[in-house]
Length: 511
Image (cartoon, rainbow, N blue to C red; front, side, top):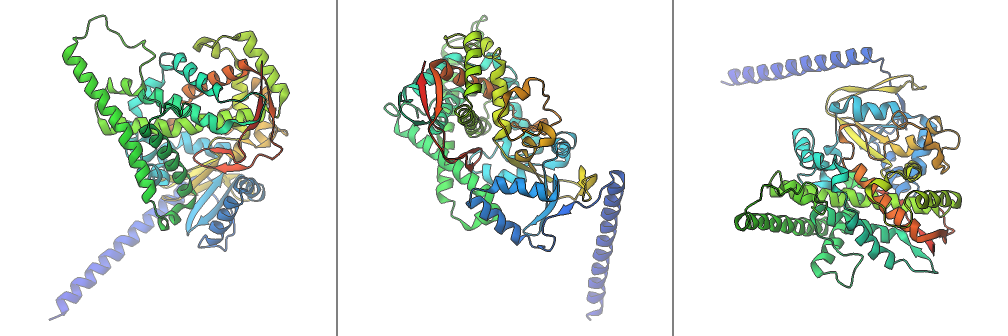
């Protein structure tokens, strides 16, 4: 009586085995063809005997805790070459600082790699429909909400907003004594970006007028970003830690921003009912219009708009604050650069607040920013996961002369810390801060990616540079010198953006 059942079971097993064998053969053949086409060979492997990747996790965690992770990255590239393989919890991972591979992943073979699986678990709780939590059509839709807006920086850059924030900032800078500029820059950019993004500032520079709700917003946002950075480095290990307070902080941020979105929509509906729009009404040139208002001109999707605004609060704040902190850390140690920059600002802009046009004329300032972000890149490494079998153009063999096969599901970690400091790209003085190198330098082929690259390049990079430029020009107009008051060396603090653990302790000498 069991014979028909056994036969059916045996047939099913044979069918499954045959199907699996055919599928495996096709995959093998496809990969073999890909290897031949792109001359792929195995790269140098870090600790090839560590098949579970446990040693890699241990050493990486140790260096992170000892604040030597970036030094370790440099040492590994020196030891194994610009591209090498490793394992993390049995997963095959490829590390590279080769500009050819970085460009390949971000631009040439963009469609072969996903970003969301690397960071979705970090960003989804606070901005589930934001660009950092999505790939494919979802990512395109989220990005489209403000792509056109950021393409017109002249229209959206409000110098009045920038000056109001600077006025509050400069009151907190003492005369004749040391001050840590790093937390002040974070407050400055948080207030500016919040006002720009949603028309509401959390007033971190004005604690005397800061409401309870705004204080909670600022604290929740800072806490959420701190946990996101922590969990990003812990990887799967973060599941062993409680995230209750993190989820509460994320809810506080989303709730505050969603209330602002709903109030703006309600205000628009009320105004539409009570005040008919005149034919000559035109808000296109109104720079006081917030990003939120501009997005709502095209959609009333509350969740999508909320997450677009929250994304700006997360990504746009730390990156610009990090750039400003790094710049003034370096300027305090390079008097010659500060003096040249100040003279160019006075010659080009004068002592009055800058305009959009005069900011763009201070070319040496852009060189200073480029060099600061080269020496201390805001995001020292990033990652993508292959969504199909693909390859890297270089890194195979011990000399890196051939391609490298990347199988579906394998991860490529690319390091701007390595590419930005490469002597092959930037010369023997690559570790030195010398803005003049940018006077004739083209960055496209050098692995210089402070704002990423390709289709996922930061949409707000020009706005961010304008924002940082305005603050820097006003500070340098106000202070004749910036003097270093910290003998401690630069020490890495890796969060969502790179910063100095010791801050930026300086004395600002008035003009």
